[in-house]
Image (tube, rainbow, N blue to C red; front, side, top):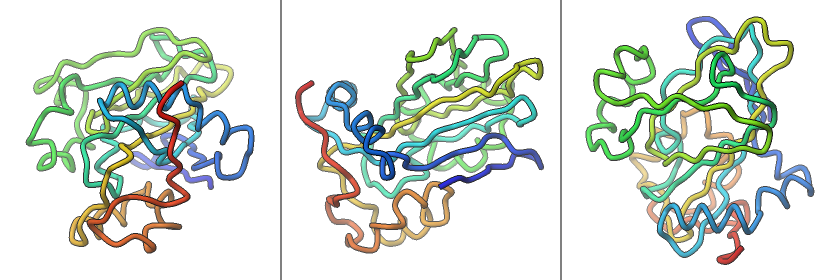
Length: 222
């Protein structure tokens, strides 16, 4: 599914959700034991489930991607959530629109209360609270990992770029994660990423364990 996201009147990127549900080749890659191993190891859990994948395309005419955290858009009642952002095209550190991270934001217990404001923060505003970690040069196949509560963003692509920046992001959640309680779930159901859980969320009771065929379990060993 393709969605366009807008920032201050400009499209900030094109996003294709859950290609692994439509391609045998991409499903095999998304369920790679190696990805599952590192996701589980980074989270300190025994196993993970694939939550979603998204292909991002940012063109020179697109605007900036504003600060956000992935878990704020998901239906899970857990902190054990991680995303790998895999470059499919060269992403130079300068002008390549790689991800920028607010270091330590995943440990900020007040994040829940100011996350709505975070989307409108500029670099200077956010850097007064966190150290901003800029992306380094990435070649196709290079990847970064970030926790589900880590605030991240991206600047526009250099207008002189001859092709779009393309990246594939996959998000994993602990295998024993639960669904949010009803009152919290109703909020995230309005979020842009609801396209990923809309097909299955009605089949799992709020507060119960997140187990469904559309949340495939990855192997415990690579």
